[in-house]
Length: 291
Ligand code: GLU
Image (cartoon, rainbow, N blue to C red; front, side):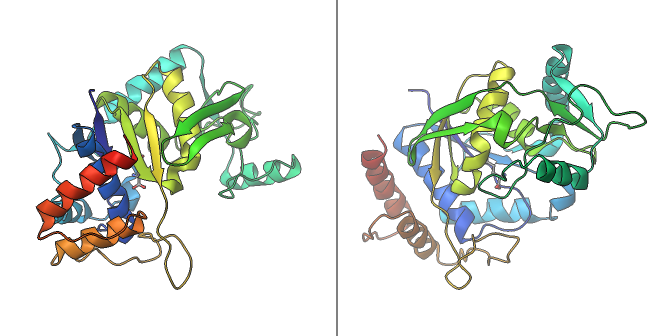
């Protein structure tokens, strides 16, 4: 099997206990399948990029023994590829300009009684789908999504479905600030890197159906998904994230950090003399659970 996996951190801060769990799971899945494991720095959202964070993450991965294959891909250098994908959709009449502000979208969603999604997100109500209102200029560029329920099987969580047109609406591919949307970048890059398997945190489960729909519109091959449970902060019960100040993984004790991430994935502890032995045994156990 020609397995290609990847880890795709946003460099908005160092690796923390939550992102290490995602990194470890995707590394183990790639190694368990004799595959390649690629690293992609998702610095498409340049205002959120913290200088030096990408290099710090790479140093942490190296210290933990989570070696990646081949060259690192940087989204900030991939503008031409995103433009080409966008142009191919535009040539088929699937892109339109949208003049709505964030506030207007929230208000019209409220008026239309659209239910927010599980993550509180309000769907785009399609205001500009049939042309910009008089006197309005395009701020963002959206893709016309087909109707229907998108179904897929998650290798950890089982069958999933979402009516993307209804729950999300036509999504912005180019944002009002001129940046490419994460949703476009991730789909284009996974295909460009030949990724067969995406293993990541369950916070991205709600993005998966739309990424599948977008990939299909672009004629890209489908990908398998496995979403791992999120680590919650013991005190607040919130998802551990850079935004709520999760501390960097301490890589001066790599074996301890790896063991904690392994336990957080729900696997029982086992003894190992060092990092390499631990990772070998963990990959063998992972392979039995996720053949
Ligand atoms: N860059 C995203 C993050 O750090 C991950 C995207 C993905 O794995 O698809 O949350």
